[in-house]
Length: 347
Ligand code: DAH
Image (cartoon, rainbow, N blue to C red):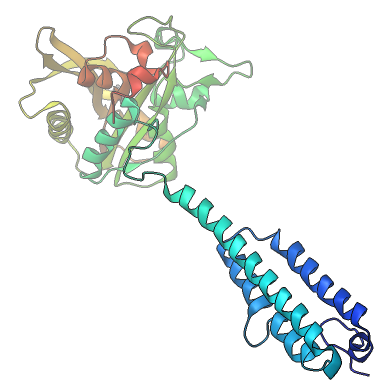
């Protein structure tokens, strides 16, 4: 008995009767057809071709070696014919699959890759981000670090530690939005002076951007939520000249080297002396762009620094206002509406 290793059939038996060898080739062809219908790629076609028509180990070769060659002499012509037919069937099938794959390949390459593709909406940087990036870049060059703080603040950090007296009108003036538990939405980024000084020892140079909130009615210049950057520096020998020099340098880099800058005496509870800084704007005259001053000794007391030993300056500015000036935006609301026609003008 000769068991055929590929089909597990008794070859002697099959080859002894002509009908059953017909059936064997029939099976060979139908399993080829079944496999053929599943071929969908160039790679699959190659494996399929090797499996069936491979010179050494292909199924046709196997049939030739084991079925035809072992057939008894009187059956040889018949098995030879079956083998031939099987070979043609396999070759035709392989060619057919190849052609099918070829045409779909052609269909793919008939796409003209030189034509412009469908337009895609590209994102743009928000003008507030562009402005802050530029401010950050300028101060980075001066050795400042960036930090952030919470938008929900305590009365202590937002007012008390910044030396606002308990009955100070600024608590009302700043139109504070209180939460039910007595905490509040920070009205400015200045509380981060306290938070950072509490957690670090001088020398310090920090820039703190963030959203701030006030109970204001929205119009073209007001918004209940807007953006500030707080900046401050603490060291042993910082003077008002350092403050002036720093802000002068910053404003000229931001608005242009010929910008006219004016320091005007002012008052903030957490700085002494305090100033407001104006820049000259063609057609509008001097306009205020930031508040600043030397950090008040009482603030140092709150964070445990010795005011005899340490000095510092601080400043705060509105990013929205800087953006409106820089990009000539006349309505602050445009910054918050997410209108793509507005936003795509900024890259
Ligand atoms: N926090 C002030 C405000 O929101 C702005 C400000 C003024 C910040 C003077 C400062 C400063 O750091 O020194 O109106």
